[in-house]
Length: 107
Image (cartoon, rainbow, N blue to C red; front, side, top):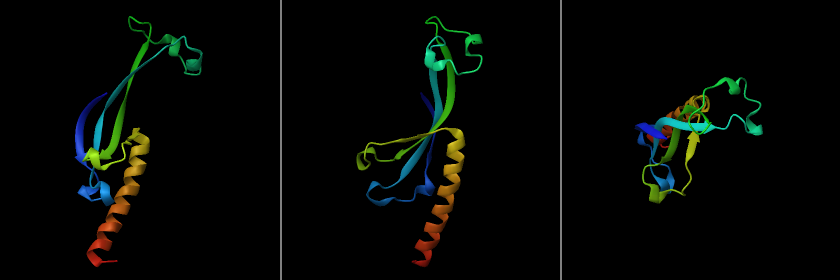
């Protein structure tokens, strides 16, 4: 895994005892055995070139949500794939806007 960008989550809003969160954006590198039966459902996987170990290499973007201060969290992290991330961020942005509005109006 290689992280290439960090950003504050929810504009630095504090979440209870844990505090603020940050998002790490990066690329995860994987490899799979094209001969393993569990990979037989992957279309044309047998046509992919392999590395010296006979494995097919591939990569995927990732986004990981975690507390800015790791000691204040519970040790869990939330990895996400791009499609899920955009849906999640839409919901978070709506919740953040509502929470900020409530804090300003003292709801």
